[in-house]
Image 1 (tube, one colour):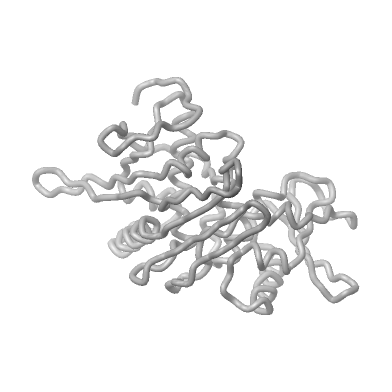
Image 2 (cartoon, rainbow, N blue to C red):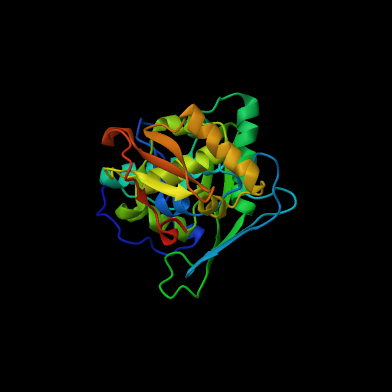
Length: 295
């Protein structure tokens, strides 16, 4: 890899014009794109979901559609995008040239996201790549007017590589401009706890990303009404089941780096309170997030 000045925005190039970025097989902190943490882009269950996600709040619009064959990309599939973002940020910070065209071995990806490396795990990785490629997204995020939608798939294309004798050489994938540009923008990426990959529940994973995005180190923490979280999640479950899942997560205290609590209001509604463990204990004056803060 050659040294290269940092890029502010990636060039819009076709596949033949993209320089190949070989993923670095080194230990690095996992990074996540804030836009993906803040909005409902992924299915939260492991069963195939074909019902689109259609979210709108103010000028923000997110519509996600899948195919009958593959369904929507799931929040577990999004681990591959976390791997990609981590690679790009690490290479950029070390002064290396990056590209939307990435090359890696399945082992490197699976190992980074905490999965097994059996033949079955390789097949699951391929299925995840297929869902990421076949899921179509339309969003107004980062469009200045809020009226125009940027349309893309999470992966433009991917393929397995082999030498002339058929020996596997890993895989190649091409990331979309929208995702790549957001990762290159330093203010739009956050480091996440590696323990995230060990979270097993879809709502649990979604909630960690949202909490990491908004949690910060406010002295009193934050609190979000259950209803707003439900709308934010894009979940297909009933609100009562969603609320039950939230209470279970609070009971287990399973989100790495954060302490959670449920606050009951006089009108019978509930709010989720969270704060960074490094910021001390909860106070009774937790900041209430405005709907626009999370929606």
